[in-house]
Length: 592
Image (cartoon, rainbow, N blue to C red):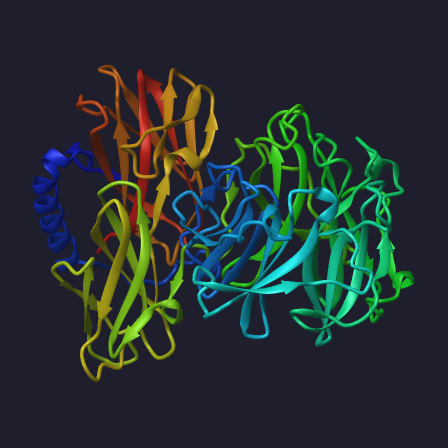
């Protein structure tokens, strides 16, 4: 491990310095791109692990605003979320990651006034069914007893585009109904929802009915579950089965639902399991778990975990549950925010959610998250454009390009950001069917950015994907007197503050494609005059650093060359004296 002399750099903040910032950014861009860091090395005997992206961690919640009843779906490189947005309209968020703090957000539909569905819009459910996007939602005319299910259909393939109202989704009983969604089993469609047996608000049951298409129920409703278990009746009456969601695994079908009062901390998740080969319309073919699969955890500070949906990791190898919860036992319907954690499976093939994770938990990101596949890019000839890449502030960001160059000669790609000057990124031969990796640094601006990569005409080289291997300090595991603090000048809008001996920050689940020497850049902010920190990689020897004083919210950049192994790595930062903030850590390959 070696250390370069102290590097100081202004934080990318403040309109008065914008001209200087862009000049420096362009200079750094050409310096780093001109000597792009390339990686085509063997793994030096370390056990191979399939490279699924740069990894890292995130922390709940998934957004800073209330996001009750979250419905999350992953498709074509993006996560989408809709939720009960103030009960007045339907909003959809679009994000490259499961963290929606920097997501694109759009209200896609407002209900017309003075209709049967103009008020109390609850639990919109975003689904992609047979080539079209649909949003199912519950609404009424201002009177709860008039809640019914309705559906929108997208006018295009863009879930943030316009929608057409398609009317009510109902069975012949036309009873009170909320929280509906479509379920597909063996090529057949079904509608699953929460409803009343009659006209009285005594209990909400789980119902299912066949569908002839995503807009139409084609048969009578079938009662699958009543809230008769003690945990389902907590906080009632009324007694609750609601917030149904569908989970598929190894040919099995499950309905996960919410029980107990949604206004109470006892709100929890229950399970209905369809027997293998069973008929979804036969209640006897469903088995109900006696105990909830996810419930409040006072020690973790999680109350009312419920109304969930399921999504997948970008590489398709993992299933994730997304649910809302609060941080206070008395929060009721306030402060309900989306959270996520992975799903595991027991020996009987049943889902296991574990305990709800505390907000302080650093969670390894879903496998493949942050890897933007070329298939999701905009293509024009030999040019690929990756749009909507977010940045909270103006900042130099690392870029990792995945490519295949089966020819025997080096190739080059012209890389630019936001239509700015392009630099040639060398792409050495990777071998037939083998993936090569090339790194460079790009000047991103605050807001959404577009990275363009263009290959020469007739090139045999192909760009497969890109990613941005930046690790934000505030989402790492913290020890001692370390805490996250909002900071509008920081890369992710927040930073990790370490104060006093014993404070530490653990960057874990750091993935690199091959073993080798990597440049690691640690961005330090607001260090006290006596500040001293230490760094250790994979439990090895520590290296010390004393950042020079900077003006408030400006960066001191500590650059090191570290030996990292293929697969997971861990880098620890320790506070040995004084106090300071860690904004982020960047990793790219160092040429050797």
